[in-house]
Amino acid sequence: MTRALRVAMSETCNAYRAMPATVAELSSVGNRLDEIREANVAHHVGLARAAASAGARVLGMGELFTGPYFALGRDPMWLGLAEDALNGPTVTTLRAAARDTGLILVAPIFEHDPRSGRRFNTAVVIDETGEILGRYRKTHIPVGENEQGAFCETFYYDRSDGDLGTWPKNISRNRFFPVFETRLVKLGVAICYDRHFEGVMSALAGNGAELVLSPAVTFGEKSRRMWDLEFPVDAARHNLYIGGSNRRGVEPPWTQEYFGASYFAGPGGVLPRAPSPTDELVIADLDLDVLRGPDPSGWNLPRDRRPTIYT
Image 1 (cartoon, one colour):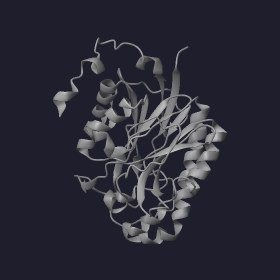
Image 2 (cartoon, rainbow, N blue to C red):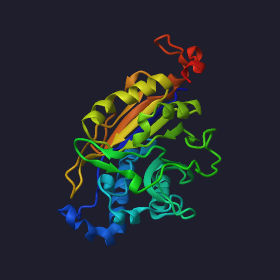
Image 3 (tube, helix red, strand yellow):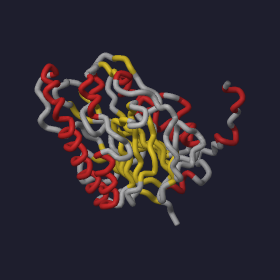
Image 4 (cartoon, one colour):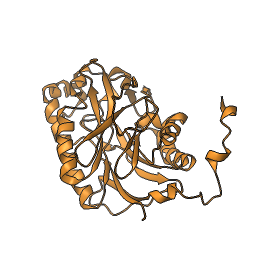
């Protein structure tokens, strides 16, 4: 029996339409953070329904999808957007949406850990029954700027502490990079900046991942060039499927443009898009049997690798 799987990712931007016209007015949205979150969650629930209607079984949402990309500057107001990753309003709504649509959902949110008080950039994995399978906390956190703008992520959240909790369906031996054995696919997550580090896909593939979703908010000339190159190389090198989802559009009141260009890649290269009911969803069909068979190139990278010479 062929292991075929239709998967989807969102490619969108902030759905809250009452954002102020200027950066100077941003403080006026401080008491409307709940409205911003609710607007974006409702929008993505709609995208989940659309993905399910198109035959998708897995949906990955965008990085920090519950609001605009606030890390273009340093403003403590946005700290209030963080929420509990296990019992907060976003996950509560999405658990019901997973049950209603029959989708496995990967939901990257701004997490506030009620035990430690720390904040993380976290993806919560929810199966089609609404069960939380676990979470992944972004491991590599960027701070810097390019010719288009700044990214000040260390102001808002910490790098992963490796404390991901104990989840029965996490089959990974690596405490920083979980892999969840769902009914359909073995699933891992690498968030945005993580994709640049050579050990990330290796750790996920080495712990059983068949599909890695990589939600991102990225911009700039070099990022645009590398975006088309990194995922196909890693997918071929590590014999897995990777979905890279980037935000698309301009979010008021900032002028920063996100280039989108989301796509899926597999061991043989970039995958064709399947028909989608909306341009805010990127859909593709995966043949998971490809991961089990011999490489058509004749390569056998696991057999021929010489790990001792790389240290």
